[in-house]
Length: 315
Image (cartoon, rainbow, N blue to C red; front, side):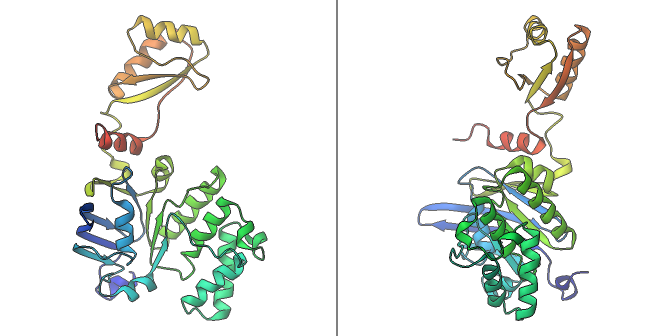
């Protein structure tokens, strides 16, 4: 049982009816949002949907016009100090102090959170190792690459071991190896009982990482799903990519059977199909035509399909 549960306060994040405007612009119209300890919750939506505005409200940096918010059991509007003690916040653009070394940068934030100096130094060393940056501990931040700075900024948000961790586009600028490391790090953090919220446009990463997804569109929360139960893949029209050992035979079979398809590329041939049943029928037909099929799989996962369905036809 977590600290917030034993104190009678709701754990994780609970937001209801959140609204925030900027003049005549309704950035967030009405959002309900829940994130539980032990889980990674993905916040997904198109540009301008209101995701970053919502995260700024959760991080105590914006006051909502309406609605209620609880972070680790505390109200960001009236108990901002308590929230900040329990919250790790990593925005999409980090304010790094370029003239400090990586070690000094982390120790500075440990001091800001009033962590005793010996523990702060130990924590900085742990986080440098976690970010795969120990060899840069005594290098100025300005010599780090963009991806290295991104990793440093992410672990900076963890310096005080917060109950709730909120990350806005944490994988921006990261190479594939670094993205894998980030996913492993966040998974381990969530499994230790913390609440982790990630907003990102890299949907393939979120699909592998998140336990739950909340969709935001035009300032509204329009859907919340457990990742394993996204209401798409078997029934939605999707693009499937096919590869064959005999490309001309594949093209001929698709044309003969009336399938509209893309031009062949090194990656394969794309075909739009109504649902999984149509894909199964296509595969059976190609096998019957003795086309040496190597692979047939949807482009993108269930999360991407759900996102495209959500944003289809929007202006």
